[in-house]
Length: 436
View 1 (cartoon, rainbow, N blue to C red):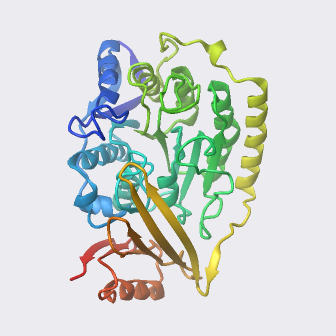
View 2 (cartoon, one colour):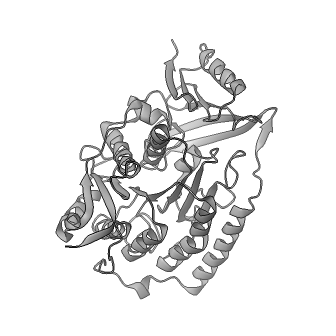
View 3 (cartoon, one colour):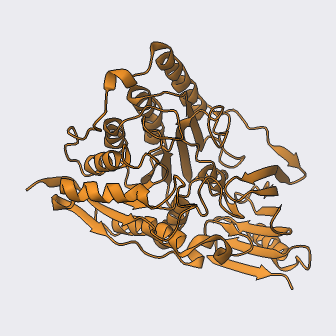
């Protein structure tokens, strides 16, 4: 009998009752062929690889990571809660040492969901990795966590949630935002004023294949991880960078993705995108599982795989080498961001479009420039669906002055806001207050 060198827990949830539409790329069939492939290949016959059921994310689990307006129930279906619960189950298996690694093969995905949520954007309602990370920190204490997002689309939601958090390193490898949704993820996006350098974006050119991706992993990601020294490494394992994916322009393969995970050695992987239902997902997911378990993955091949035909040209590889050097230098010597400052507050004003639901949000974020903690955050937000709302976030190291100011802002809103939500990371309090 085959035996895994590293025990692996696999959590599977295809969300049969949720899809954007019956023919939309993000639908339940995404995982059904993977399930069949696992059975046919005998994945769970390997000693050390086990299958587990997802948990169910509560309101509190979600509110640790998000401001949901007007409410959690208005944003999340049961499928979203189970998807996030699958990620939590993966974390529980690893943190309780039931398995060395875990892979949450769940949907709907989440990495485009930002700190504030008004609806669905980029197929995402809530950020399942962020819900999982905040669950870990709630139950196991403060951790240094690295997220390596290998989805073809820039993980703008995860970047937004941890923009001000120096304890979380966010690295995104993605197709250049000048050529693909959401049009962001450039090297100068390197973190907020309290977490400069903790965001690393690697925008790869269209038609990048195995050599280009693995060069970026070996020459950029691994040296940065060695410097950051995280307690946990999490792979946002999007698979829409596959050469057969219908909505992207990359040329990554199942072999490449397996090698990526062999190099990265993530403690936890969480499925994100990937819409080549038959041509990619069964092979990529199998390769990832085998690599995470330390098993031989050399026989995993797509039927139409042609390495020579997919390889990058010399010009593309030269570009990736130069970009890698630039990004590595930028991590170790980050350029100060162009942060707007008014009095004691850093200001960000943005318009955010929810492409799936057709919602336009206007947002004004204020971060207190405090020399005693990482700063109180106040977010004023309104959208084409809902009147002004307020989010109040107290950081984990919140000082008494910021704590008082935060609670005063939350309780003294009067009729200025339709909904106010409080996220107190220091005292582990999460409150929701609709106005009368």
